[in-house]
Every structure is written in C-alpha cells, then in structure tokens.
Image (cartoon, rainbow, N blue to C red):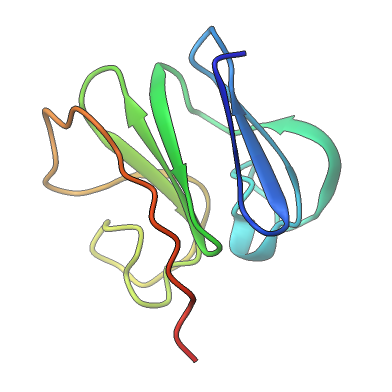
Length: 113
C-alpha cells in the first residue's frame, strides 16, 4: 500500500500497483465502484489505474494519474468533478482541460448549506 486517505465517513487506499480501494459511507458514489451502497470492506474503484496520488473531500474524490491527468468521482451538484456537467458520478471521470499536473492538494472545506 502506498497511502491512505479519509473523509469523515469514507476511506481510500492507493495500492502500489496504482489502483485504489475504498470503503465506508458512499453518498453520491464517492467510493467510485459504480454504486451508492455503503461498504464495510474495501472495494476497487472502477476503471482507475496508474494512480500517483489521491485527494479526498466529503463530496468527491480526485486521483492524479501518472500521465498527469486527473480523474474525479462523487457529488457534482455544483460542478466539483470538473467535467462540464453537474451530474454526479459513481465512477471516475476525467477532469476537463487539465494535463501535465504534478500534484494534488487536499483542503477540507465544509460543504455549503
């Protein structure tokens, strides 16, 4: 295992093979396994390989891939996934218009009411 990240109710592990496992609460599909079902054991994030680092929030999760692009999944009511829609996603989608990214910064901001 390379690293572990968590939110208030969910956790994520980046494995040495570049894949991600997640567990816990799954609002808006934040676990990334194609469902909104909570999981008490780690499940694999769907269609995600080559993960260099991960950033989590209470509404969405972001993965920096080794090719310098970013994938995001979870709640997208206000466009947090960066894919040009406001449709939430239970699996990773590519953040539009970003390439050659070298790092992610985690910063927890309380969700707006």
